[in-house]
Length: 457
Image (cartoon, rainbow, N blue to C red):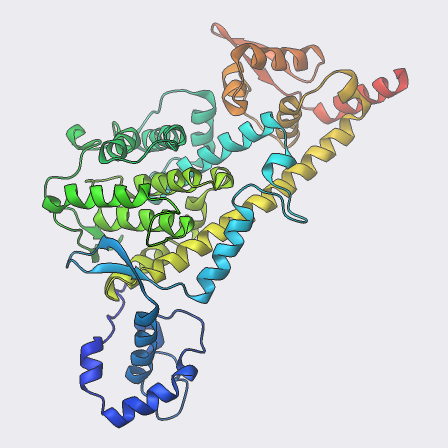
């Protein structure tokens, strides 16, 4: 990846401009701020200036002065001790409005929340699937190579991981489930280290680094080609830095200065990546911390989306958002803008997914007809049959059904045995356990059962 060109310094630009020219630019500054895109110098310098005779340096000077006047300083600092800042640019305000509307789990016209779209059992299944998706894609962002099918089979069955890639996914799944249990408690450096330990256990060359802040300054961030992208702050600063980050994480809407909850969660993601407090696994821990913060602050619908699935599609943009902030004197607006778009895309994917799943559910309900009510087919069983009708080849087990729907063992066993009695699954012994398979002609069997049920009604 090419490192973005750093902007010319503001003092240098001011010292090189004549007073009368500066006065003219100030009088016409409205035209320089008309473009609502929050461009970095590396992008701006390649675009046509907003007026003839205006240089890119003059354009940047006017933009930068305007941004500084609106900048909100943060208690978070870069390696030089400068405070990070951000601007509530118009695209940010629009994104925050959208996220506030859709991520809190409340109903909006034409967009029912997940709480009203599905029952409690279905919510548990969606939540399991989301945590699984995030565990897989977040690990893939950091090098895990296990295929999705194998990873899903491992997580659903509960079997032990077989290699490092599977262990990364297994651990990340456990870490994501763990952060859901601590959203009601303040964040501490010890709690953060506990998340990291869960996420990295058995995957680092030195086990002593699991759940512990790094002790040296050898950690570097580079791309796949070895290009150096970021040198984190010194290890000697980490104790103070991580305490400051935890204090920021624990602030509420009543604390001053006010910081919007979504921006706070986004900045936690950014700062953990910037500080790079661990020898490895910083990205996975940062994304888990983002979920912790969003849910803690009331954005419960975020539990049902995967931001890593969006990030995996644009890893270079993800890194560039970091680099734009670092090369422009700690202006975190670039990262915030990028991250808010990621959240919006993830929420959009969730709405599409919910609509698709509800359509599938209605189709299978229609296929089952009165048979469903007569034979007491529940939503967990409908989901299983839907998967089988779509061609799932892996066997079902009591354990996998139990984990997928977060129900008791006895409930999962009853679900599968009920479907077996109806002829919708076949049972085969494997060792001391049983596996369940859908017949090849499942659709025809359901059709016949539904027809017979209707005839006998």
